[in-house]
Length: 216
Image 1 (tube, one colour):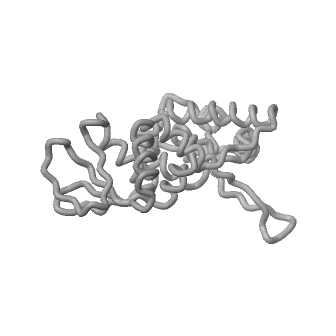
Image 2 (cartoon, helix red, strand yellow):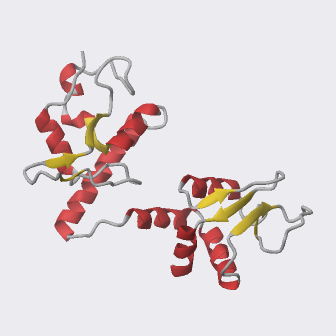
């Protein structure tokens, strides 16, 4: 038998985060108007931090039924993020979800009290990337100022012999200790495309990344 949340619990979870997804990288609005002027659309989910029934993600058999149904065991998410956390419970632990919930409620309170306009999702992503790879972004900006029409780049070691066609930018493992990890993050955010050929790591920057680097 599932220990589902009561409707008042679901409504309060949503209101406490201003009807936005609690995952920091998402913050998607989860409710809005329906065509029928008397109704609203909801794409949010009151997700269980510890599962509602045995065998579910992060299930804790030490909890009573009442505690599983309590608001403390819930986090408000969009449907995509709710699916995400349940598909990888080893990564999205109880501690992670409790932290999301705390931060989302703090953000909602700050926006409410200070009339802060929520940051655009892309702004949040690029702000995070600036912190993770400031040197790489700085080098890319310099390259684009000198070569504004170039989009392709390769990853190399400085002692490698590599023939290039002359239109590729190059970034070196020697200069960036975690270069491969940075590239994976850019791929995850669809800011570059992988066109690796002949075992040389080769990529193309998207126009979204180009626009950001040129304007920031």
